[in-house]
Amino acid sequence: MKIVTAWRFGASGYVYYEIGKDLMPTGDSDLFLLEPGKGTYEELSIGDKLQAGSWVHFRESPTTASRARFVLQRGDCVVVLKADKPFAVTDALSGGWVYVATTACGLFQ
Image (cartoon, rainbow, N blue to C red; front, side, top):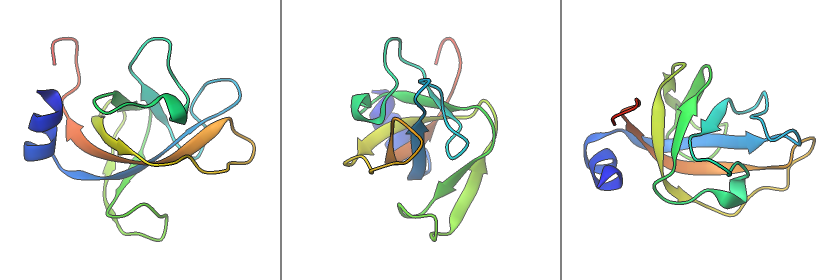
């Protein structure tokens, strides 16, 4: 239900998600997966919730050349709608673009 609600009523777009070798977000992507025992890009699933640890660009298409629609602020959440194949990343464990929709954050959301 949260996926349908976010897709229908939230803004949808792309964010870059990258996890370092220490299983923490890198400087390229300050997004935390709010699911226990998961973390790499390959483990992302539709419906997973990501929370911004600081400013994160929310883009129109999956490229840094794409216009940023807006910037997620610290504490803002998005829900994964689609995760494509991961990139070959350097100095990180895994990463790639994720198609997401904005959603509410919080204990009871």
